[in-house]
Length: 360
Image 1 (cartoon, rainbow, N blue to C red):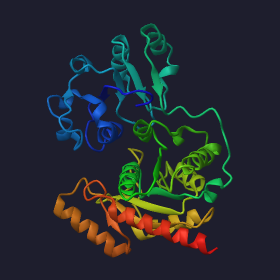
Image 2: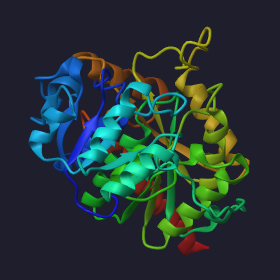
Image 3: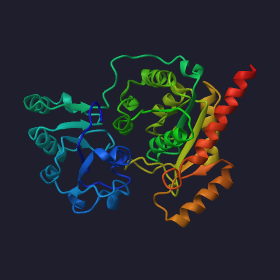
Image 4: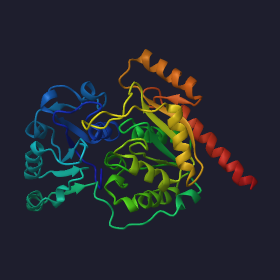
């Protein structure tokens, strides 16, 4: 991860579950071979699988001292809290990790390497403080270059934040590669960067340059791919995150989209700041995304990725069947049932695009 194979201890104190420790869960699912322990004193003695549904027998321990028995060389901050600051109670854990000679990786808006005390300690111990959310120095303004790439660009979009856009893109990449399609994943958030070792956390980029940063990532990925899968962020209907969502949509200029939704969620996640708006119908969300995309380039929603983690298997199957009937689109939970129906829809779109190009 990020330059070398690591032995990771994931810090998820008090919140190690499937929904609250998004970064830790993503790393366990896609870079699990590098994780040796998870730190959460409220769940110590259990396994990662029992707590979060991923990670198998990776142990959950009470503190960094207990994690040290598994010989980690890196501490990774396993949450992405609203506001992006390091929880005050975790500062001592970061300092202890540095004293033990461990690198520290974080995806926070507050950059650990800019903290004089932590930076001095890291330098004294020869450790690295790696802030993956730090934006690139180069800035560019989008000019619709992504609309002209030869690869098929597919963007995962959402009914809300934290519904599975990154997971859907990664599962689609795996499914497409199994079908013999050369697919690339573009990471646009801190967890995606942990998994892919590259990308830009676009919510940390100055607003004028977000679409340009996405455009640069897509153009680069398209040089060696038939399909470029772009990790979506937030939702165009969210009061807090619509700006980054729309900039990503227009910077990527996708030809196709996959809509992600958590089954059973009825209201947008907005924290504790007053009543949350209701999530619109999925048919309306499809229509709104296709209309917003068309301002830059025509794009269709090809299918629906349904997050059914809160349902039992019978309920999940009913939810998938219900949404397929209601929307008329291919629907699956890519983690639970595989991404093949959505991958097949992408391949059909890719073939349509190639036929059009051949007859032009």
